[in-house]
Amino acid sequence: MSTVYINSASCISAQDTLRKDIFHHLTPQNAVQIIKAIEPNYKEFIPPAMIRRMSKTVKMSSVASHYALQEAGISQPDAIIAGTGMGCSQDSEKFLKNVIDNNEEFLTPTFFIQSTHNTVAGQIALALQCHAYNFTYVNTSSSLEFSLLDAQLQINDGEAENILVGSTDEQTDRTMELYCLNNTIKKEADLPADYLNSTTNGVIWGEGASFFVVGKIKTDSTYARLTNIDIKNRIEISEVQNFIHDFLTKNNLSAQDIDAVILGYSGDAKSDGYYNEAVKLFPDSSLLYYKHLSGEFNTASGFSTFMACHILKEQEIPEVMMINSEKKEEVKNILLYNHLAGCDHSLVLLERA
Image 1 (cartoon, helix red, strand yellow):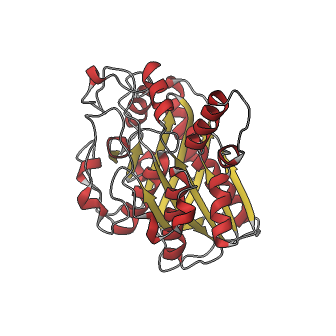
Image 2 (cartoon, rainbow, N blue to C red; image 1 turned 90 degrees about the vertical axis):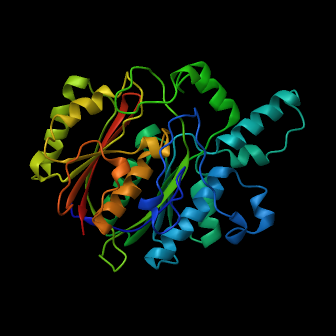
């Protein structure tokens, strides 16, 4: 499979990632159960009449996609592909609440129509008047990876040249309550969280939207080469090293060729064991983590992909992301490894363009 390029990267997250000098303003979040995204002034991008009807994830995605297209110099992408784990859950909750409050009678269809997972990609297409391929992947923590894989296949098959790819997830009050009840989210007594040496289960939950323009041709705005992606639904901890080794071998690389590894440590003692096994393969690489900056959520890997793109382009690694003290003079290959609660393991290999 031939290489494609990531020609722009935009992100709305718990960090102020819309600013230019993002590396110098990263602030870890480990003392609260839930961290919210820093949102822009939506009125600068979306007509006020439309803002009222949009859920948070649609608003975040509209702005992030706007920045991504603008940076790549693309007004009409050849396809729009979005990945999400929970979709427009705010509108889903509003619709279900109306069903209960009104005894299933006299319901307006608005919240139901806007609650579908593909609302995000649809709204972006409507705003752009784009009638091209439009698809949404709902594969929990590997939703972005499937979206990138689809874009890569389409470009390789000659069906598209520039594709808008993104991932997004939002928080809702009721879902966060349920996550606290089933201990998906850390108990207050277990805070502040130790992301790297946690002895307690549960995570700090976040949200955000990340969008990229993936293209066939390298441009002045290019961040990285998207070399390859591998996804497995379930593996045993004992199989992690073979999973990574086989992936590197397929790409004619060894562990020594990887300059930086970005791992999805979430502070959940039960599932972080996978990353502890992965670390053993890379004694000479820069080991990085990121969920103390973004929080854990279904498409948190969008934040790590965004950060990896900036690391490759700027040839700088933020101190706040470093696990070890290893630093390469040149960062050429970055490997991203992520999963959510031990399921949907993904490997993404990015290369300096």
